[in-house]
Length: 112
Image 1 (spheres, helix red, strand yellow):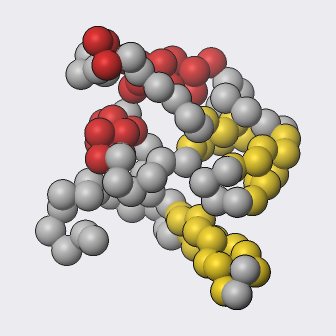
Image 2 (cartoon, rainbow, N blue to C red; image 1 turned 180 degrees about the vertical axis):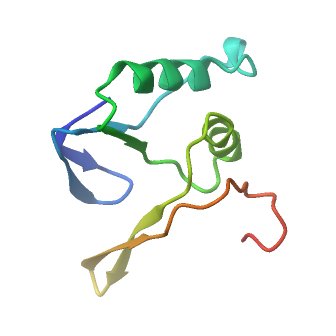
C-alpha cells in the first residue's frame, strides 16, 4: 500500500495519494498459490486495519479479470478510469469517475 506521489509506469504519470488514502498496485500472487483467495484476504485484512474514514483503492487493468473478480468479491467497486492518449508524442492524461454502484464483472452482459 502506497501514499504520496506514486509514479504509475503503465499510465506514464504520477498520481498523488493523500494521507488519508491507501493505494494498492502491482500485487502478485505466486502461481502455485493462485485460486486460494489470498489477494482478497490480504486486501480485506489491510482495509480493516486502517482508520474507518480512510479510503483504500487500487489500480486494476480491465484485462485482469481474475483481479477484478477478486476485488468485487470483497466489496470493491469500479469508480473510475485513468488513461493516457498520445498525440504527436504529447501525453494527454484523462481521468473519469463513476458514482458507486452494484458490483459488475467484465463478463457481465453489455460490458466491454
